[in-house]
Amino acid sequence: MSLLAHRNSPVPKQVSIVEVGARDGLQNEAAQVPTAVKAELVNRLAAAGVMRIETGSFVSPRWVPQMADSADVFASITRRPGVRYSALTPNLQGFERAVAAGADEIAVFAAASEAFSQKNINCGIRESIQRFTDVCDAARAQGIAVRGYVSCAMGCPYQGAVPVADVTLAVRELMALGCYEVSIGDTIGVGTPLQVQQVLSACLQEARADQLAMHFHDTYGQALANLLAGLELGVMTIDSSIAGLGGCPYAKGASGNVATEDVVYMLQGMGLHTGIDLARLVDTSQWICHQLQRRNQSRVALAMGNRNGDH
Ligand code: HMG
Ligand code: MG
Image 1 (tube, rainbow, N blue to C red):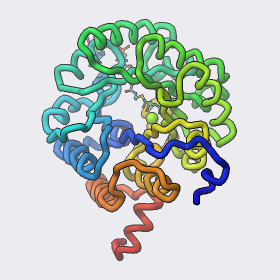
Image 2 (image 1 turned 180 degrees about the horizontal axis):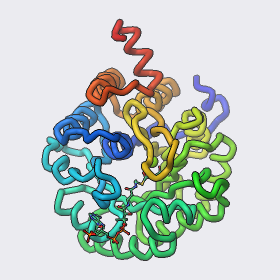
Image 3 (image 1 turned 90 degrees about the vertical axis):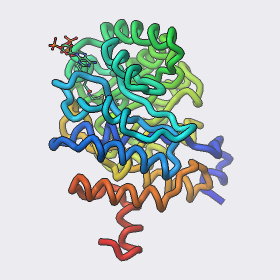
């Protein structure tokens, strides 16, 4: 019996994983990753049972050159029925490119920190919400679902502490724009479990638990503990990145998202389902690390690799 079950916690039995490795994971890679590798990563993730895959980003290629080929990635993947392939769009231009590429859903990304908003998307929070209004209106007209992000919910690389009220304001505005889900980003991985519960509890005044997601980078090694804290509040959607790849180019020093393998292993141990085959996920993780010549950041992938005699 799980620790949480003992505590009669309202933890849901099904957890939805949003794999962000092909976007958040790769966007920070200095060397251009071949389009074919990106597409194969997406295909392997889908084959492992991942149902929601952030496949690319239609941002300015001058700002994030690594994502310049997102349309080609969309054109190269083999779509699996039932899998949702999504993309980031900062403005109408990005939205139109995403739709032309065949994205199933899009995501707009706001911040709880003014300074981060300026650095990341070259405009303040107010103006970004105005831009997202246009994007959301266009998406609604075309029947395309929109997800929202709130970056720097637990702290900002430029401003430091971020008031909880600034996080909840962003959640409220994104919900008002029609986002079906808002992902709460610990962009630089500084949060700790009780802080996460404080922030998420406040967000739960603005949105239901099934309208929130947790997007935690693991810079300070707190992400799994933080996810558990959020699960205890009933938030059942988790963003994660295969092999713990990634980081935001506009948040220096921030490491990758929590590794998908580590999340799936933890959830399995707690009797929570994701529909993902852990062994296939670990194979994919080892494969992408080999392609990128990167050390695997997933402890579970490392442990399972060692167990299989694969060093
Ligand atoms: P800007 O320079 O202010 O844009 O950038 P602009 O509207 O003045 O346009 C300048 C040029 O960019 C023009 O081209 C536009 O056509 C072009 P020019 O006439 O000079 O040749 N342009 C575009 N090209 C392609 N696609 C577009 C697009 N928009 C303009 N969509 C902009 C503003 C928002 C575009 C820029 O700042 C940008 O692309 N920022 C994105 C930064 C980014 O991708 N950051 C990482 C993702 S966010 C993240 O990782 C956090 C997250 O994971 C959650 C978390 O962890 O917290 C989501
Ligand atoms: Mg991120």
